Amino acid sequence: MKYLFSLVFLIFSILSASSQHVIQGKVKGFDGKRVYLLKFKADQQEIIDSTASLDGVFSFSLPSGTKPGVYRLILGEMGRSNFFNEDPQYFDLIFNNEDISLTTSYLYPIDSMVVSRSKENDIYYRFLRSDAAYQLKLAHISPLFSIYKPGDDFYNPLKSEFLTVQRNFSEEAMKLSAELPGSIVSSIIGMSLLPQIENPYPASAMKDFIRDHYFDLITFSDERLLNSPVITKAILDYLSLFREPKADQSEQEIQYIEAVDHLMTAATGKPAIYDFVLNFLVDGFQHFQMEKVLVYIAENYIEGGCETDSKALLKKRLDGYEKMAPGKKVPDILNLDQDGKQIRLYDIDRDYTLVVFWASWCPHCSSFLQQLSKWYPDRKIDLEVFAVSIDSSRFAWEENLMMQNYPWINTFSGAGWEGKAPKDYNVYATPTLFLIDRDHKILAKPLTFKEFKREVDKLETKGN
Image (cartoon, rainbow, N blue to C red; front, side, top):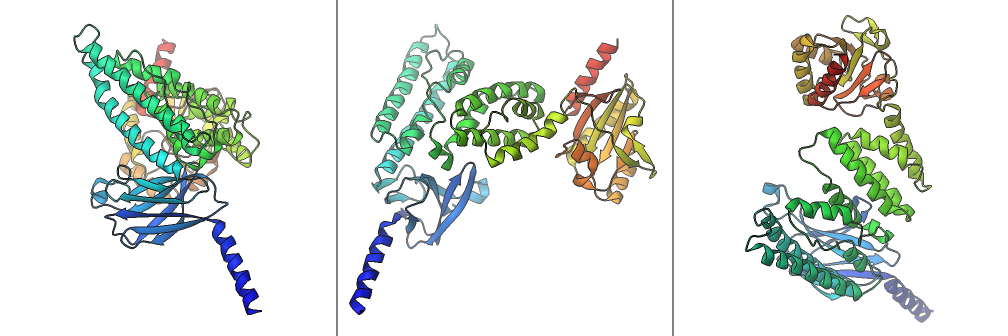
C-alpha cells in the first residue's frame, strides 16, 4: 500500500509539473529583495505574483491555462527614480505557453538581455534592440530636413541615408517576424511597421504621410495583443499625429474626430478589440473633457459595437453627452440663492444666459470667474450668469462669495456632485459652462474664458 501511494504521488507530481510553465532568470547587479510579475489586461496592469530574489536570481511558475500575452517583471526603483519621478526598473516578456530562461542586467535590461530558453522572447529582444537603434537614427536624421532643403548639397545624401535606414529596419523586422509566423511576437512586430516615407521635405510632410498611411500595414487583428500594451501604444501614437499645438480645444476636437473614424475602422471585425478601442477612446476623451468627440462617438459607434456587457454601460455614459449637446434644450434648475430664496433658471428673462458649474475649492474655477467678473460689467449683449455651486458646504460657498463678490446670480443646493442639476447636466468636472439662448437651447459649451469670449464675440457680431 505504501508503494502504491508513492507511485500515485510520483505520477501526480509529474502531471502537476507538466501543467506548469516556468519563468526563471538572473538579473546581474540587482540586490532587491522581491521581483513582481504583472499582467496586462487591456490598458490596465495587475500584479499576479511576486517572488524572493537572491543575488538577482528569480523564478515564477505559471499554470498552463495562463493567457498568452505580454507580462512585465518589476525589479525596483533605481537611485535616480525618485529624483526624476521615473518608474521602477522593469522589463517585459512574452508568455505563450512555454518555459522562459534569461539573463540580463539591472541597469540595462533590454540591451543586455540574453534569452536561453524561449525562441519567441529571443526574437522579441532582438527586435526591441533593432527598433531602439532605428528610432535613435530617425531622431537624429529627421530634424535635419528642417535645415537642408532640396537643392542643398547635403540634401540628397541625407535623403538617401534616411531611405536606407527605413528600408534596413523594415527588412530586419520582416526577417525576425518570419522566424516564428503566427506568434505573438510576429504580431507585435507587425504593429510597428509603417510605410516608407519617400519624400521627407518639408518636415511636416513626414507627419502628414504617416497619418495618412498609418494603417496600410498595421492591423488590429490579434486579440492576444489585448493582453499587452501594444494596442494602447498604437492608439496613442496615432492620436499624437493629430495633435495641433496651436489649435484651441474646439479645433483640436475636430482633428481627433477624424482620428476616431480611422481607429474604429481599424478595429472593425474583431469584437473584443472594437470594444476595447471604443472604451479606451471614451475614457481618454472624457478625461480631457472633449465632449464634441464623445458626442460624435455616441452618435456613430455605440450601436455598431459588439454585444457585450460593457456596451450598455458605455451607452449610458455617453447618453448624457448627447442630451447636453449644442442645440439641445437644457433642464430647468431650481436652487437657493445667497438670500436663501428659491430661484429658477427658466425665470431669467435675458437673451442669453451662461450657466456655470463651479466650486470654491477649484483653482481653475477661481481663475475663470475672476476673468468673467472683469468682463461682466461691460458686456455688450443681454446676458446673465447663473452660477451653480457644487460645494457641499454652504459655509465654504458663502465665504468664497464674500471674498469675491461675484455680481451675478449665485445659487447653491448643498448636494455636491450628487445634486440634481450636476446630474441633469452631466457635469463631472469644474468649471463646466453652458451658453444658452432665450429658449434655453445650448449655443456652446466653452471650456475656457477665451473660448467663451469668442462665442460672445460671434453673438455681438450677429446682433450688429
